[in-house]
Length: 126
Image 1 (tube, rainbow, N blue to C red):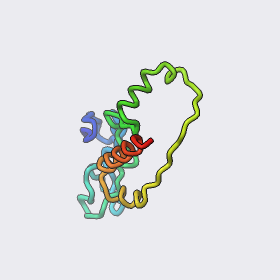
Image 2: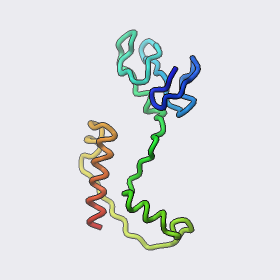
Image 3: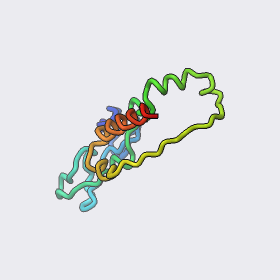
């Protein structure tokens, strides 16, 4: 079976990808039939499937960070970033009212883009 996440070819019977660890199939909670990971409903009984792929997500090919790229590059070029340094810092904590409800309604990538814009606005202010 070929993994839908990374394309790795796996032997028959594998439940997890040997290349990335993603779930290769998900059992139906009602009839236990194995369904492909991208199915939302069981192909045998029609019951809604749990998001089994979320329990063991495939690693992203390009890791995402909440630190803006220009700032991360600046930090990594600094000698003190590698050796360590004690500094006094100011931390800004901001709560986004209703953010959990909004995050539940959006695709993870869309939510990530919203948070990136939010952090950019806060960073400019700081």
